[in-house]
Amino acid sequence: MAFELAQRLKVLPPYLFAELDRRKQEKLEQGVDVIDLGVGDPDLPTPQPIVEALQRAAENPDNHKYPSYVGMKAYREAVSQWYKRRFDIDLCPDNEVIALIGSKEGVAHFPLAFVQEGDVVICPDPAYPVYKIGTIFAGGEPYTVPLKAENNFLPDIGSIPQDIVDRAKIIWVNYPNNPTSADATEDFYKDLIKWAKKHNIIIASDNAYSEIYLGDRKPISILQMDGAKDVAIEFHSLSKTYNMTGWRIGMAVGNEELVKGLGKVKTNVDSGQFNAVQEAGITALNMPESELDKLRAIYKERREVMTSALRKLGLEPLESDVTFYIWIKVPEGYSSADFVGRLIDEAGIVCTPGNGFGDAGEGYFRISLTVPTERLVEAAKRIENLKL
Image (tube, rainbow, N blue to C red; front, side, top):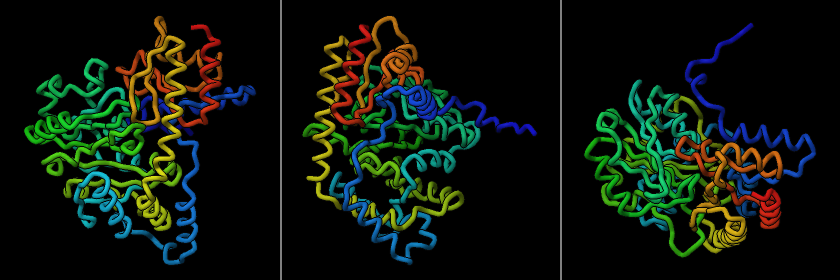
């Protein structure tokens, strides 16, 4: 029998990281020593206190039942307390915080709560693919705004045509940014909030990388700005901060109506996150900052090693001290796909082509600093041997 896929799946491109996994596996089967600088999956282990908290909680039979749809009260309280300590933002744990099964799940489900058939969702380009995918699944129309170097990889909202603005329901922003490693300013957020209020548009902020900073300046949250809670919801995750990508635990916070709408979707499509994982998340959110400083020091060393090597090879990485990504122009004469293909085929290095994140990413590639320093040094040597 032949079964036809739904149109919403037919219009999707192959999921970027699934395709990278396929090409990586192909090389591994050929016996190639592959260095994977593609997916942003931390190689460092989850801190032991978090693991031990999960072990204790998993042994408690009270946690073996269905969890709360919106998250344990204790977890939501820990999230609100963390936001207060980190950003000086007041959040009510009862109606301004919801637990997520990883922030990807929340990002994908959010448009289902507010996007009607034919509504526009404004998405950055290049960007995490799920902003557009969630829009398509909800019956919306993605409209992309290019992130350009001359604008510090911030979207130029003034360039959006009025007919698009009139139909727009949501605008996605993501700072610190994946893939470009750019960061946002207070002025940008203030202007965005003013614009969103004027046009009755929801701001959906993905702040999953706020704790991956390598200098003294800490990234900000849009919710720190006056009036942000009137129009904004923020998605966050424990994945990158605490090396918990496989644990699938995150949160969405902000405007009460937006959090409630997302919760209504989740009530109908999932049964919440395992309480033991939430208890481990509470431990994570209360870890001493000194433990995170150790992780940041490792990423800082890796960034310095890799950016130095890339510059010696004549490549141009973006100057940044946030995220564990490096955004780099491809050498002259190459497309993004051609250069990344050469890295895989001739050097056994998996990187991510910029155009995999959207058309405006053409001409760039992304390196993820989620392998040991010595492997980054080896990768740089292999690129040098290509004699670009």
